[in-house]
Amino acid sequence: MDIEIEGKGAFRPGEEIRGLVRWELPKNPKWLEVKLLWRTEGKGDQDIRMAETVRFETPSASGVKDFRFTAPSGPYSFSGTLISIICPI
Image (tube, rainbow, N blue to C red):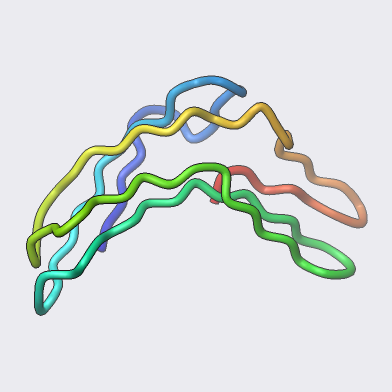
């Protein structure tokens, strides 16, 4: 699988995130999903949260589909001494 994001690498809350997903698999999957996630890194436990999902039902074994997300209102990306929040991943 390959995912391409259109435009810049940083997005403001509420901005549209668009891209393409390409895949080539040995057989037809039941579905494919592209997920917009954010995560924390640093001392302590790591946290991963899903902001949004785009699901493609009954795709063929290979193909290309476009997707769109809306950048979540929070949390903002942040890099600190003890913890960092990386949005999206």
